[in-house]
Image (tube, rainbow, N blue to C red; front, side, top):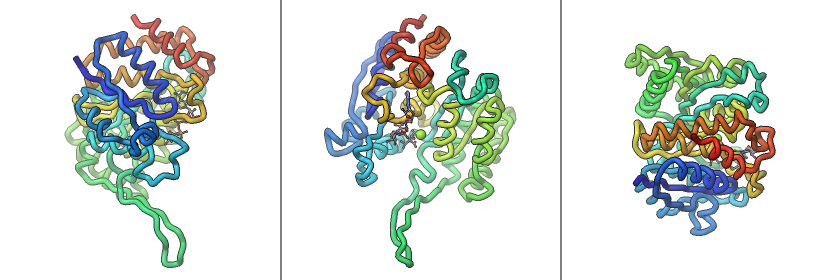
Length: 348
Ligand SMILES: NC(=O)c1ccc[n+]([C@@H]2O[C@H](COP(=O)([O-])OP(=O)(O)OC[C@H]3O[C@@H](n4cnc5c(N)ncnc54)[C@H](O)[C@@H]3O)[C@@H](O)[C@H]2O)c1
Ligand SMILES: CC(C)[C@H](C(=O)O)[C@@H](O)C(=O)O
Ligand SMILES: [Mg+2]
């Protein structure tokens, strides 16, 4: 039986993974094991990513991750903060490819920040590089010769890192409409010039995919002007982080966007909503569980090959929303549990 590791984390993380687990239990038989991560783990063990948690993730068939982040630990040394656990687990598992689909579920036009006819056109897969870039470059703070405090984070990619994420972008586009937009800042950054050069080289392997390039500032603007022009976006770690939060509001709410973090085709993956621990609503039963439930569907699809079950969950979310189920972020009044009940009730 497949082993699913659940790492609930902090804030609303446990609230939404609880509901995603209920949905998984409804569509199959799985072994579940839970372990703490982030601030919760720091509280228990003095470290945000305990060895036992990492070991569980490594021996599982797939990981369902909630969210990490706790205002109480913001002033800790960086390696002890909750965020270090998330970056650490991505790096340790080699999860370099992060797929973040943003599409509008029918009925959520009013929740989107865009006008309804524009909102309806969004159906984009953001392929975000996840283990490189300024996140993992040398960083620090110091003092300049003039005695001023300074801080630095090195933005760096090598050609192998760019080539492998570019291939994921091309493969993803091949399975969709065949349009790949590579987003960079090649007019200013050397990392982006390398990125663009390598993406162009790799494009020779994919004659059926139409490749375009866009600067990230323009991409941010185009995403709200005309999101329907995008099929697949491939971009670096930092740009992908920002653009995916932006895309979520085009699709109605950050509480609707799932993600898959993969080490390549098939195999161990980690699945998580793109949102964080949402300290402002944690513990109030207000969190939208759909991003976590849709992440569970991605888990079934990408790591366990359970395509039918994944389709059923996605259809159930669509039906619940079409029937009017809404948490507060979508303009409704349902609690986290009641929203999941609506999805469970819609499961065919
Ligand atoms: N993958 C992750 O675990 C992850 C992602 C982003 C941020 N974080 C961490 O989370 C903490 C809070 O960060 P933040 O406030 O910038 O981002 P956030 O995503 O936690 O919250 C941003 C806003 O969106 C709302 N929101 C988020 N998820 C929601 C949901 N499911 N339903 C309804 N509303 C939702 C929140 O209430 C908040 O107003 C920080 O410590 C940050 O580092 C973690
Ligand atoms: C919490 C943070 C490290 C993380 C990221 O930037 O990757 C989050 O914003 C995300 O999108 O998963
Ligand atoms: Mg983010």
